[in-house]
Length: 309
Image (cartoon, rainbow, N blue to C red):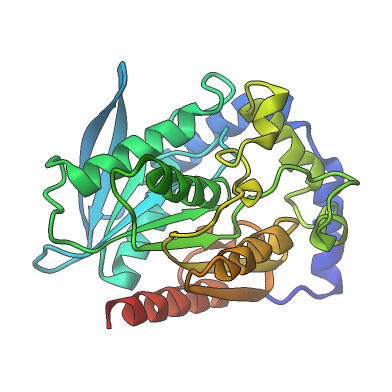
């Protein structure tokens, strides 16, 4: 996935279109559903669906199990998509590959999407599923290792669920894996992070697009100051899970994700930070044959093995 001059030019041309996500998100969802149907579903895995109550509704959860006899440790996966797109169907391939690569059960949460359901709908849905996984009997996971994991907006949600769990005192995850997570509230000219300016125009995910997602996700301007919206704003980051953060070199969210890891470490938590060289935001959606995915699986497995030793 080396980014040579030709690739840079192509990325710059596509990124320059910079369609306003506030106008395009419905069409993007339709395209995701169509692509998922055309791709079909792999046949070499076990899959089943469950539902977890959250207030007056139920949150769908799809569970993928690797080959062999379980029970297996569990990865509770929160998908990306800017809190606005994404879902179980278009993340099926990602979750199957992840289950195979880690030899773990993967449970992906189909949380409610904005703007139909704005903040804090998504974190409350994700928290409800995590709570059921840790404390309930729906998943029969009482004696299994459970790790939170998410990419992009899903990385944000994993971090937020860990903060909510500590603050509410009902359970506390031991491990979390954050893939190029969104952790801050400003992706414009006022951002303190160089990656917003360096990578915010020419690498598919633009700063303008991130700002559009956050506008669709937020219920009010006050949300931008809420640590459950932007976890880097949390005044207290103590008593958080052991954390692996994997950033992407050419991603506008690179620095805020890495800085979140540094802040967690300063608060006394164990943290590993790995920057994926020559990678774009969203690389985790690539097939397993690509080098960044192979390296990501390697880092994930090393982290999980260390935490279990």
